Length: 581
Image (cartoon, rainbow, N blue to C red; front, side, top):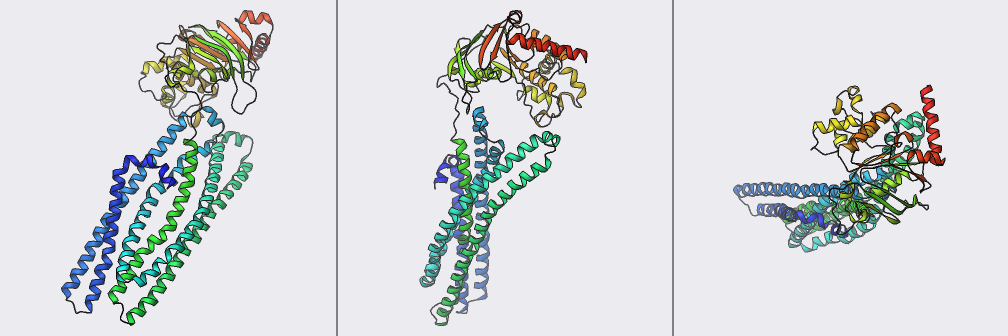
């Protein structure tokens, strides 16, 4: 009942169809139990020398009732199972939508393979409860109610044998059902481990093959697979014990009824037609009684899966959301950091500490520093992937916490160092779901990113499929696709997070030249380890261990002979070596 209460919001839109399905179940069972009653009268009538016409009429009535019962049984399955498919669709849609709302901190702590299992296998198990388990539970109730009532009317004494089955079955259901639930949780967790490993291995197949780790991964996978097999097989064993036990109890009841009923016939206390009808009702009740075990297994497995789903649904977005967000109109791109401190989840040391700076509209800010100095964290804080420990960030005098996440992120076009491309065409990766861009918009974007020079290398131009995570493209090509994706949106602020690290110096210079024209009247933030990318920036800040240690223009910072000057001289050495080669 707790499981069905949790799913109640998903039942509500389909309550009329569900009610219709329940009515069809009632009618299907009502007509089904009518058949033995007609048989009873026909067989008893043989003792009274009934006519052939009466027998034909009885036979036709039985066939007609069977057809009507079958028709309602078809409607029952079509309606109830159909609703379960609709609810499965709704549940999967809502779970995926909820996952899209959760911030990166959640995914930092989660395994993608486990989330995939919940979106597929767990939801399928819940659907089996929503549809088949519900249908057979109600079917069992009506079948037992109608069947036992008519059996009581035929002979109360014989019916007691059937009633004795109920408490025994109830005890078995309770004991075995709890064990199936526990085994189902363990089985789904083991399946999640396998899914996570498969996802990681297939995504990193080139690393595995390059380091000749195939055998090692096979061994690890075999261990995980054996663990899943053992835990899944435990469910099979429990079900294997469950069903034969129920059938044994049912068979014992049948044997007792034959012995007791046969003696009543011999003694003349029970007519043959009544006994045949009684045994037919018993056969009709066989599946509802046996299905109790099957339904219990479905409910226990579905309950275990629903708990896993609810753990995600109960995980609310951790980012602060203003109840009455402000609306930012035509942002100019003014950005201000005031005493910003940010610590990543599961980290004891702040990645940013007391960081303050300002960017005027239309200006370019360069962010430079050693690896791990906090450069990319500034971007994460600005687009609100994580909440701040303290301090404020403003865009056009609006505290970013007072804006909706959608409005805030519309202000930025971000190009990450390691861009994620989707397994679709280059064109769709650039437009990213927006069909309003014209061919002229796309052409301009690929010109700015210098992707146009590579189009002839692709078999289908912009319509070339790039493969999983853009695997068919080089690192530089992926970065240029990401640049085109950012600039086509025409945001007021463009952010390049080491976005040219995979391109050669000549291409970098040309892209920067194109970007200078594009960035006119736009604010730009360039995070880089290449000094050449920020030489012309109006302002450069240098980070070290999460704090700003230097700021100024290129020439000023070189003269100070600090971290920036050190990075600059290293860059000159690298350029000289490249020229020598």
